[in-house]
Image (cartoon, one colour):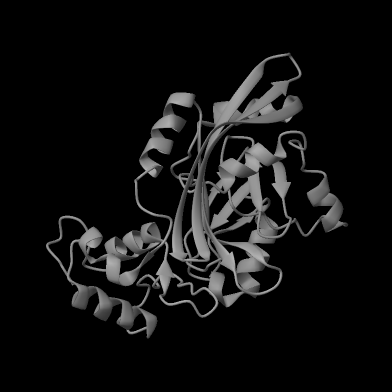
Amino acid sequence: MLPEIDDTATRIRINQSSPYGHAYYVDAATARAAIDMYPELQGQEVTWSTGPVPLHISAEGTSRFTAWSDGLLVRARPHHPMSAPDPLRWYADHRRYETARFPLELIATARNHTSDSPAVAPEVWLPWQHAVSESEETVDVRRDERAAAPDCTVRRTLTLTRYDITCADGTVRHLWQTADLVQAPNSRPPYGYEEVSAHHTVHATEKEARTALADLDDGLPPMMMLSEMHDLLGTTPDALRQAASRAARRERPRRAPFFPPSFTFGGRPGTWYDPRAVQRWWASRPGHGPGRGHTR
């Protein structure tokens, strides 16, 4: 039985637990057809709204996101309506943020942003559809390095960047980004440095951004070996080694987090990890974490 969706609905969301996130539609007929066609959508929670329309749809690669007229910003693109004769043209017609597309994408893909808990208020980015120019300035850079071997250095770079978006009325609006990048030498061609981990957060004010940057600047080295991290995690070497071994063998409850990726450097001794990723893994294991009284 198909769920009740008002014929006037302009945004329909079908909740999914898949890696691709929720499914969005812009008209009731297309949503009903999808539910009828795909068994995995049947029985899922359906919510709908009347009024919101897509202002900007980015469908390139992994950076898919949609900015809606009511201020919702999600990492998903809606399915084109069945009535659209040319789907590619339909998507192209929903691109009102071409000048400010990159800072808008930064919000949509930020670690501190979700549709239910936005990183910045919609009032910050809604006026950007009238932007005439966009520029950026790096205002703070912090670098740290550590020798993983006599001829091998790993590094971490923290960056604070301000984006200036000039609107048609002459007003200049700002977005602040903090970025965290850990890199290690690539032992295979092309040589140089490869990304170990990278993420960013976005903020409406410089004060918020500098607070986030200070939180990132935790004093930990760019990378560590597992044998160095038991004190950091408040556990014992054996408990950490056993938990890591179970996670690596996938002997873990369903939906439990994977163990962070490891890195070795061209036959040099040691297996290395981003300690912040290991901290997140350790705290997020089912039944573990701060205040739960566990050491294993």
